[in-house]
Length: 247
Image (cartoon, helix red, strand yellow):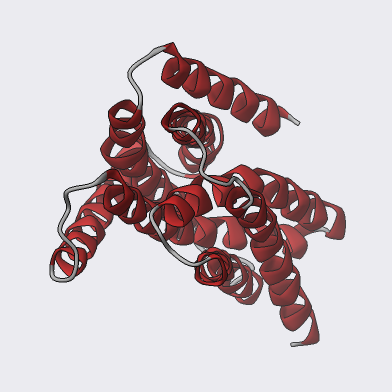
């Protein structure tokens, strides 16, 4: 029981630390230009594409067959569409969606939901990693912490520039990282968890991130600025993501 608690706390710390650092960096950008906002959102898109293509999906496919992976992806996309509709409905009751600030705020909320879903299988990986060895568990936790930093930035900047108070932005950023600790707990408790279940969780996270990229980040970045900077941001994010996945 003591080992499970330690693993959960480690997952919780590393899961929230990276996103919180990213969130703190994000809120320090005072009145950035639309060009810069577009670059950050497209950068986050490239990073997420790299995580999906070179981390989540290859790992899922190594654990199970293509049919189960596709099922997880479809469930992830479907869940994010549902969340998108719920967020849209909630905001439309209080805000008129006429200006870029409100759409940025909505984008921040959608990204936060997606990251919370994405952090759960990462926590599973940490928990099961510690079950295999201390070295593997720590290396996974540190790697996840590092790639959570730009994710925290991609979440906090649209929220902050959408009009949300800094303290509330940080609260939501931390909240999105808590699911890493929850995943670490389940990974530690069910050390020999079914490979199919782990694969579905990974594919589910991949599907959620695919929807965030294609349905929120890329459309919003193109809406903010029409130019090469969005493409450059996407490419840089993709290349850095590939580099981070290979370390």
